[in-house]
Length: 522
Length: 92
Image (tube, rainbow over all chains, first blue to last red; front, side):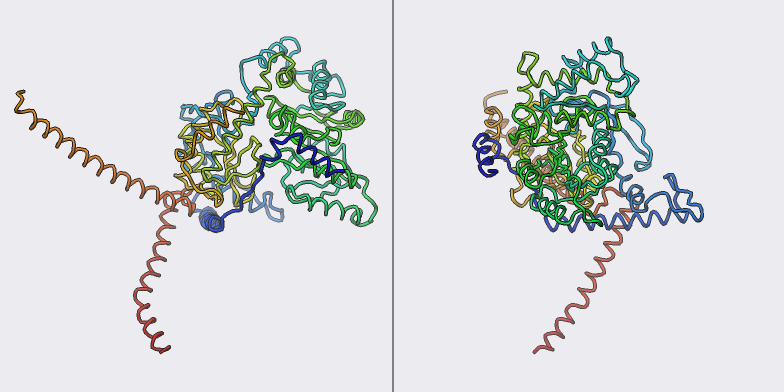
């Protein structure tokens, strides 16, 4: 039955299943060796500096643990070593303050440091640059337009806060409106919204799972999901990223062997996956997970933080992309921070589930409810996306994002960079691998007018640092061309073209008309 | 000026631009060479992670690397002919 359903799905949506590839090219051997050598040199020099600091030849600039006798030290030793000796040297590329709305373009404030990044001073200059780091997928992060007008009007009507929790007097009329609208958008029975996206995961998984339950989660899940799972008290098992065979093995082992010491059957099994993984750019394989879940009678929790609004032909997330029925997923979760340009999170599903969550969630009695302008920003963004305001602005934004993603990704891959992830995901990670190149790429791109986010340890594995581009519907073709030209130059300067599958090409060697035809045709 | 002076004037002008063009391309070649050396130096700094380090640490590491490589090269130059000769003698 599942095989025929899959072929039906493929015939219904020929465009994305046949052309969407998901690739994770292997690290070239020589690159891995040089990366490890680089870390070895940095560690050796870090030891030397620590020795000089301990002996007294150099002053200690960090706050140091007093380490009284017979007490256990407060800080873990490797992470402190990493922070002092590796992170601080390139600290100027992380946490850069900005001075304008983080829309398609942003003004980055320039900082100078006299003592190698231990202290910073603002030079007063603002660098206008193309914003390739904000999760502004549909371009709603603007300070003018219908959404912000509605938000401002709502402050005049409702004030800023209810100063109360949901269980007390915090459920305003607009909360009910938001929840019904969101439930209609996702085609589910009911929905509940929370003030913080991270807290939606961390405070609601304990309400859904507890002692005697099993949580099977993907290795690359977000910290909020891991925190929620640990807080719940259930047993946690992991399966390899997007590996369906591993998931099936875990499920079978769990059902066969039962709970760890008593061998009793599990009370329930909850599979937690994400729609789009923000560090890899990969999509979860939803039809296969649903087939497994139905076969082994487990529950499924899908975290669509990055995929709601950004993926799918109507912007309804991975459910729309894979064209599965929304009733097959037990718990839909998502955030309003990314595509809707606001803040907060939601959980949606059957009415009985949401009624249970309304009573048992930790944020119901400990967190204040959402603020009026934030809710009205989401409501107006949602009505634009759904087309309820009468224009087709929503569909235009979704199509513009899809066009931008294909244009940008294809050119990067054809230039010879290693790009991870699915062809349709708006998150584009380009691998850098070496620690010194993290700083070099960020600084050179900023010099050329592109503000990018480069990530290293601990957000990624130690030897897999990357630069992550987040595309937006607000980016025009000229902005993308400028970004690609800058990346081409930086790629030549820093030698980032590692791919063995595609030959290294410069930007003006690519056949431009090919890409432009594709851009203007879809 | 007069018509008779035109060809010489033109020849002078042409020869001036021809020499200028020569000089300009030579300068651009030298510039490109220096840019290439700078690019190589940048690759050395990036691959060994010296790009992130302070100047005295770069000096320390580069001195150490130069000392090791020069010692290896010197030993090879001094001892290799004798070793190769004795190996040939041993095996023949």
